[in-house]
Length: 137
Image (cartoon, rainbow, N blue to C red):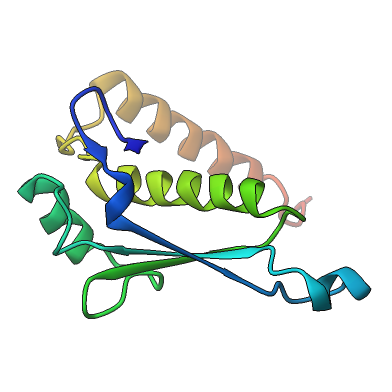
Protein backbone atom coordinates (compact mmCIF):
# COMPACT_ATOMS: atom_id res chain seq x y z
CA UNK A 1 0.00 0.00 0.00
CA UNK A 2 1.29 3.46 -0.96
CA UNK A 3 0.17 6.35 1.27
CA UNK A 4 -0.11 9.65 -0.60
CA UNK A 5 -1.81 11.59 2.20
CA UNK A 6 -3.87 10.93 5.31
CA UNK A 7 -6.93 9.85 3.35
CA UNK A 8 -5.54 8.88 -0.10
CA UNK A 9 -3.80 5.54 -0.59
CA UNK A 10 -3.05 3.22 -3.49
CA UNK A 11 -3.71 -0.46 -2.73
CA UNK A 12 -1.00 -2.99 -3.56
CA UNK A 13 -3.12 -4.85 -6.13
CA UNK A 14 -3.26 -1.76 -8.40
CA UNK A 15 0.54 -1.70 -8.75
CA UNK A 16 2.24 -4.15 -11.12
CA UNK A 17 5.86 -5.00 -10.43
CA UNK A 18 8.06 -6.98 -12.79
CA UNK A 19 11.70 -7.84 -12.23
CA UNK A 20 14.04 -7.35 -15.19
CA UNK A 21 17.77 -7.41 -15.70
CA UNK A 22 19.44 -4.10 -14.97
CA UNK A 23 21.51 -2.31 -17.59
CA UNK A 24 25.06 -1.07 -17.26
CA UNK A 25 28.15 -2.33 -15.48
CA UNK A 26 27.92 -4.97 -12.81
CA UNK A 27 30.10 -7.87 -13.88
CA UNK A 28 28.71 -11.39 -13.79
CA UNK A 29 25.96 -10.37 -11.35
CA UNK A 30 24.18 -8.22 -13.94
CA UNK A 31 23.79 -11.19 -16.28
CA UNK A 32 22.41 -13.57 -13.65
CA UNK A 33 20.15 -11.53 -11.39
CA UNK A 34 16.98 -9.65 -12.31
CA UNK A 35 17.37 -6.83 -9.83
CA UNK A 36 15.78 -3.93 -11.75
CA UNK A 37 12.09 -3.25 -11.24
CA UNK A 38 9.44 -2.08 -13.72
CA UNK A 39 6.50 -0.48 -11.93
CA UNK A 40 3.28 -0.05 -13.90
CA UNK A 41 0.31 1.89 -12.56
CA UNK A 42 -2.90 2.35 -14.57
CA UNK A 43 -4.33 5.75 -13.66
CA UNK A 44 -7.77 5.23 -15.20
CA UNK A 45 -8.34 1.84 -13.53
CA UNK A 46 -7.09 2.99 -10.14
CA UNK A 47 -9.09 3.87 -7.05
CA UNK A 48 -7.64 7.38 -6.86
CA UNK A 49 -10.09 10.28 -6.44
CA UNK A 50 -11.19 11.99 -9.68
CA UNK A 51 -9.15 15.11 -8.90
CA UNK A 52 -5.94 13.05 -8.78
CA UNK A 53 -6.81 11.17 -11.99
CA UNK A 54 -7.57 14.35 -13.94
CA UNK A 55 -4.40 16.09 -12.78
CA UNK A 56 -2.23 13.03 -13.52
CA UNK A 57 -3.67 12.49 -17.00
CA UNK A 58 -3.17 16.18 -17.84
CA UNK A 59 0.38 16.22 -16.40
CA UNK A 60 3.13 16.39 -19.01
CA UNK A 61 5.64 13.68 -18.13
CA UNK A 62 7.37 11.12 -20.34
CA UNK A 63 6.67 8.36 -17.80
CA UNK A 64 2.91 8.66 -18.38
CA UNK A 65 1.76 7.00 -21.61
CA UNK A 66 -1.14 8.13 -23.80
CA UNK A 67 -3.21 5.26 -22.40
CA UNK A 68 -2.78 6.66 -18.88
CA UNK A 69 -0.26 4.13 -17.59
CA UNK A 70 2.67 5.26 -15.47
CA UNK A 71 5.83 3.23 -16.11
CA UNK A 72 8.78 3.66 -13.76
CA UNK A 73 12.03 1.73 -14.07
CA UNK A 74 14.23 1.53 -10.98
CA UNK A 75 17.68 -0.02 -11.29
CA UNK A 76 20.03 2.05 -9.18
CA UNK A 77 20.38 -0.52 -6.38
CA UNK A 78 21.65 -4.11 -6.42
CA UNK A 79 18.63 -5.63 -4.69
CA UNK A 80 15.05 -5.95 -5.86
CA UNK A 81 13.68 -4.73 -2.53
CA UNK A 82 15.58 -1.44 -2.63
CA UNK A 83 14.67 -0.89 -6.28
CA UNK A 84 11.02 -1.63 -5.48
CA UNK A 85 11.08 0.95 -2.68
CA UNK A 86 12.78 3.46 -4.98
CA UNK A 87 10.12 2.93 -7.66
CA UNK A 88 7.33 3.45 -5.12
CA UNK A 89 9.01 6.62 -3.85
CA UNK A 90 9.29 7.96 -7.41
CA UNK A 91 5.64 7.15 -8.11
CA UNK A 92 4.59 8.99 -4.95
CA UNK A 93 6.78 11.95 -5.92
CA UNK A 94 5.25 12.03 -9.42
CA UNK A 95 1.67 11.94 -8.13
CA UNK A 96 2.31 14.64 -5.53
CA UNK A 97 4.01 16.86 -8.11
CA UNK A 98 1.10 16.47 -10.54
CA UNK A 99 -1.52 17.26 -7.91
CA UNK A 100 0.24 20.21 -6.28
CA UNK A 101 -1.94 23.29 -6.62
CA UNK A 102 0.08 26.38 -7.38
CA UNK A 103 -0.76 29.62 -5.66
CA UNK A 104 -2.47 32.12 -7.96
CA UNK A 105 -0.18 34.99 -8.88
CA UNK A 106 -1.44 38.38 -7.84
CA UNK A 107 -0.04 41.21 -10.00
CA UNK A 108 1.75 43.91 -8.03
CA UNK A 109 3.08 47.37 -8.81
CA UNK A 110 6.34 48.93 -7.59
CA UNK A 111 6.06 51.38 -4.69
CA UNK A 112 6.77 55.11 -5.05
CA UNK A 113 10.00 54.72 -3.06
CA UNK A 114 11.17 51.90 -5.38
CA UNK A 115 10.43 54.05 -8.46
CA UNK A 116 12.36 56.97 -6.93
CA UNK A 117 15.37 54.75 -6.08
CA UNK A 118 15.40 53.39 -9.63
CA UNK A 119 15.35 56.87 -11.19
CA UNK A 120 18.04 58.15 -8.78
CA UNK A 121 20.30 55.21 -9.68
CA UNK A 122 19.76 55.87 -13.39
CA UNK A 123 20.66 59.54 -12.92
CA UNK A 124 23.84 58.69 -10.98
CA UNK A 125 24.87 56.13 -13.58
CA UNK A 126 24.33 58.66 -16.37
CA UNK A 127 26.52 61.22 -14.57
CA UNK A 128 29.32 58.66 -14.11
CA UNK A 129 29.22 57.88 -17.82
CA UNK A 130 29.16 61.58 -18.75
CA UNK A 131 32.34 62.17 -16.72
CA UNK A 132 34.19 59.51 -18.76
CA UNK A 133 34.29 61.73 -21.84
CA UNK A 134 37.25 63.77 -23.10
CA UNK A 135 38.25 66.75 -20.99
CA UNK A 136 37.99 70.10 -22.86
CA UNK A 137 40.49 72.69 -21.67
